[in-house]
Image 1 (cartoon, rainbow, N blue to C red):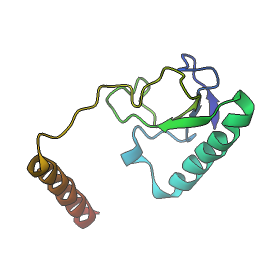
Image 2 (cartoon, helix red, strand yellow; image 1 turned 180 degrees about the horizontal axis):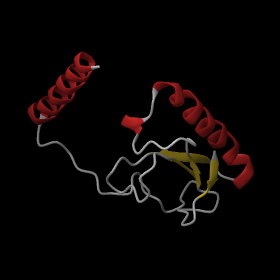
Image 3 (cartoon, rainbow, N blue to C red; image 1 turned 135 degrees about the horizontal axis):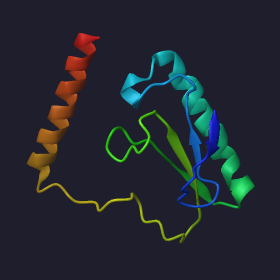
Image 4 (cartoon, one colour; image 1 turned 60 degrees about the vertical axis):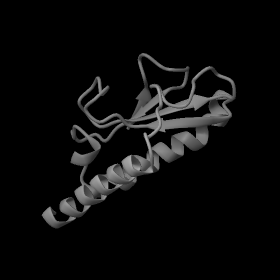
Length: 118
């Protein structure tokens, strides 16, 4: 299902949620991925016409900044020069390629472990 966010970033900001309770994206069963993201895609596709937007911002918070402990996808209408800059937090660079490589390897390793555990 989908409904308007009660505290929208911009008018039209919509939340797409599964009816069944699942706290985070990691908790969402595989059979609900396509319906959830299919509905998010449908709303994102309709948003420019509905809201006179140039595009959309689509996002999920997991645990941190997740004010409601139920997985939900934000679909926010965007306009060029709307004042929203990239993400909602400051961005930073890696110190060097070696640091980026260590981070990349840590993520690859965690994915490999998760595949073995499942």
